[in-house]
Length: 107
Image (cartoon, rainbow, N blue to C red; front, top):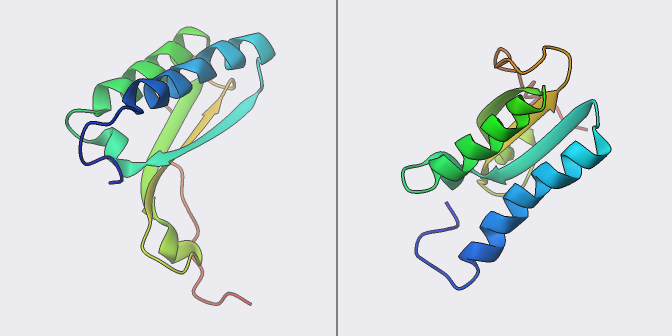
């Protein structure tokens, strides 16, 4: 993960994640996608991610997320990220895991 030690930017980064909640509740989009470093799912940082998702379920969003290696999607370096999809279709439930189609035959 990118965040391996404390930084003067930690508070700004956390605020940016939580700031999405206010924007989302104001705009009320039907579908939301969020991409983060996979480190946000790890010990020491997972509470921020879980709180963000919990806040969205309070507003009726369902979500699913998956850690993937973007190299499998054609990015030229190993780059693990958390991809999250939130939507209003299931009224605040945890949705089943989404599938990422990986194609080795890219044109």
